[in-house]
Image (tube, rainbow over all chains, first blue to last red; front, side):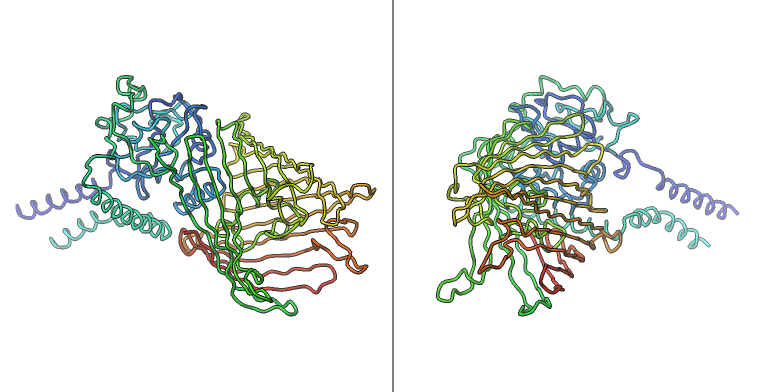
Length: 163
Length: 444
């Protein structure tokens, strides 16, 4: 009888543990959004979503006459890039590549966004390159970089669109 | 019983993983695999690069700012003490010529290429079916400073008469298609000098010589390379810029140049044929509220001197409407070309237009894109520049045309495509021509 009880308790414990796997985990990659961060030299604190789109499409290339926008992006198959492609570009990875090859080919840009393979690299470049801008996961923003509000919103606030 | 319970639990535990795996469509999975492979390739290259540079450790790797912190109102404010970039990090390694432009000792041009291989078979009398190499195009791009860029485009084109000997053997013609040096003051004002694809037609200023970039295998007849309806090339200077205009995103351009040469399909590369410069003005909008939509128009003015000495004044008015988000893709363009011979009373108007629609199918990993284009060119007999008189007969330099193109594009990879087309074209005084075309186009 006791053994049967133990088995049943063990069973229910396993069931609970199994169900716990289904619960959303804090910071789970499927739910996290991205935040737009810039080099502190950028003279902007708030951008409209359409301006963010124009910047990442390469249609707006200057913050001011003396400060050029430098686009930085994480490598393919990273959450930061996926959110950016889905929400801002509304493109697949292939369409994104074609967009930039076309842009360079039309002499509308001299290069594609610079690509980085780790957080350390992109944060280092963001801090070093005047006018640089990137989208990074909300949970990994380092100190010392400027976070841009989108349409007046920061991540987590109602109306924030980059997730 | 125990084994059954354990199995049930294992099943429950494995279900989230299965469901997450199933959440991705086959297209997304394949895209993801491609992206990961691409990333592995790049990482391998980077490791090799770092290993080869191990003699100078830490020369270029940027240092990340301090530890990550969740985004809060506090984090949104930059810390002035941490804001001086030069104190924070070593110089980053640049992958493109622009950002930061660190201590550049020599320009580092970026080179890309485009090419295409074609097969054509038509029922036109006297034509032969077969393969032909399309254009082999090299594209150079170099940032000379943070505000000065150079862009060059060189093409090698197979021709029946490009070789030596009599009769001339087949060979390749080399041509500098575009060579542009641009000074960018800001988004509102950019000035450039060089040889352009005349910015009076959306297709001509969007796809250039990269067949892979365009949906169809061929350009519309009104902007065909070597064609004469519109001046394809323009040598001179161009001022352009973008104005936000409350979300209308107005783009303007104004150009001054040599215009057409005495052979009207060619630009005045070596100089102008007369003292009347060609000029153009264009305006188009990409409204923020309609992502993917563009509309605009342009005017072009020139005076052309034929080899025989007669002169023509030329006015061109163009307009375009484009929806280019892929699903669907819609392009419509119209141009009216007005010619008037100097000293004559007759003025003629020739029109050309096309409408193209394409739709990327949602199935088969979104790799197939069927499309259709109808195009029309009308050249009146009174146009003495687009017609010539040979032995008392009116011979069109630019023939009228009504044609349809039905095809499908299949993207073999992110950088290569296959296109299959059926074309049906009718020109005045000639039998209708049907043709089947296949093309593989790519960038490298």
